[in-house]
Length: 395
Image (cartoon, rainbow, N blue to C red; front, side, top):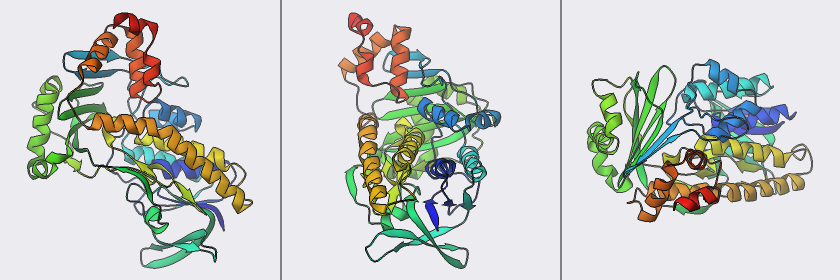
């Protein structure tokens, strides 16, 4: 029997397996995909997530992989241009935007080095239950072979359309409408910082990543998805041209190095986080629009919180384990709801209120306020932190 079976070996699952193995537990990590494969992602790991990678001893490997640090952020809306560096957290001032085929593989490697058993191309088809209904393991398939494995805890880290969540009948405790659709591709040798451009009905971001490529994303209101998907490349380039004309000029004369990818299914929800013998982490339990790129950092936060709450209960009394899972669920919702609300607000792509623009005009004039504001973008600071005596004097 395993102490934990983790379903999904991406950012949330691989890191959960890693930390549980380092805590002394016997862990099985499964993924339906192959090791080192790619997945839809905005890539961005904000500074809180970078700090987690540093704590886990993975950051130096990420640096060595050739992923550039993102120290400077530019944000433009209306007549406002905010440019500077965040203050950061835990000594980490830069963000990173690694390709997922690199980051996920680094986390799996670290988990395996910690003693995790990893099985790729393994699909979960069912959950095992005892007579009381408690989940005590999984059923799965690897190619044509069926298998079953038992565990004290099954962790669903298998994404927004989580099989574990469906099989455990985890209900939604909050669900909001789809707000944006997004398309992206990679452009070679484009000089760029982490850049964010906003206008009513549009949002564009550039994010330097591996292989001297820059990820450029374009967001549209969800109501336009049916039309946009019929001519996605044209719509993508036009959104960049209208929303980020300076960035568009840097792209002219270049060709993307990969095909255009996109999604019109950016769900916004919280699922019930846990039940007897099971728990959800990462996008399986909570997903929001990618426009604020909080997914990876939030997944890392959830994993650390889960392992901290589980503590020494995983190998002992199931009643105590369930109590620790309930505490994790409560802390998850408390920690992530403010960022969720903020993301929904950004994803409306509405015309900015004049009061907000006045605040941003004051912020752009003061480097200290710029740093605090960029901490807010990264999920380090709250709006309350921005209202300093310096800001109030400028308003």
